[in-house]
Structure formats: C-alpha cells, structure tokens
Image 1 (cartoon, rainbow, N blue to C red):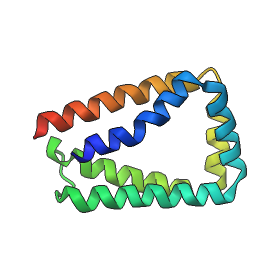
Image 2 (cartoon, rainbow, N blue to C red; image 1 turned 180 degrees about the horizontal axis):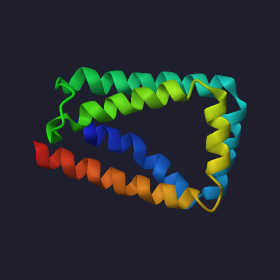
Image 3 (cartoon, rainbow, N blue to C red; image 1 turned 120 degrees about the horizontal axis):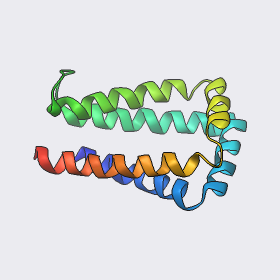
Image 4 (cartoon, rainbow, N blue to C red; image 1 turned 60 degrees about the vertical axis):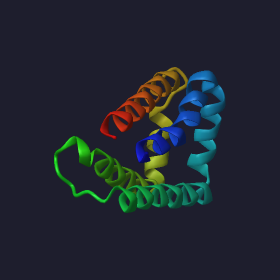
Length: 122
C-alpha cells in the first residue's frame, strides 16, 4: 500500500514533466532561486520518508520485502541533498527542456513498477 501511495505522489509530477516540459522548466528555475521552496521541499521529502519508514516496519535487508524501506532511505537522502542550493543549481543545469520529458517517462515507468511490486507483494 505504501508503494502505491508513493506512486500516487509521483504521478502528477511525472505527467507534468511529459506533457508540459516548458512549464516544468519554469518551475525548476523558480525552485532553484527560492530558498523557501527548497526548505519546504526538504520538509515534504523528510515527512514522506518518515511516513514510509514508520509504516514499513522491515529492516534494511537485501530482499524484495525491504524495497520500500530502501526507498524511504533514498528519499531521506534526497531531502538532505535538497537543503543545499548547489544541488538545485545542478538540477537546473542537468534538466534541460529536451531532457525533461525523458525523465518524466522514466518516472511514469517507476510509478507502474511501484504499483506492480506493491500488488505482487501483498
């Protein structure tokens, strides 16, 4: 269930990246310039990570059952990385308007994989 909720969190972002790359580029530029948005993004990522880690209840083992725990840890690391403005500037340079739909499509594939894994593990 937690992977499905994570997929629902990622779905609008991935669709925005695929359907409106120019608008997503504007959002990324605004994000890189605003320290307040970076802080709010960090808080949201930490909250999502804590929600995942508190509801998963499994340890950090190398098994399919522990996948959600590892995803929670990766989200926490991303939250820590979002605290630094250099990471936002790097993201702005790497995500050009021609690359944004590609990353959005990869995100949509991850959404499908999360839902499939969540359904299969139940």
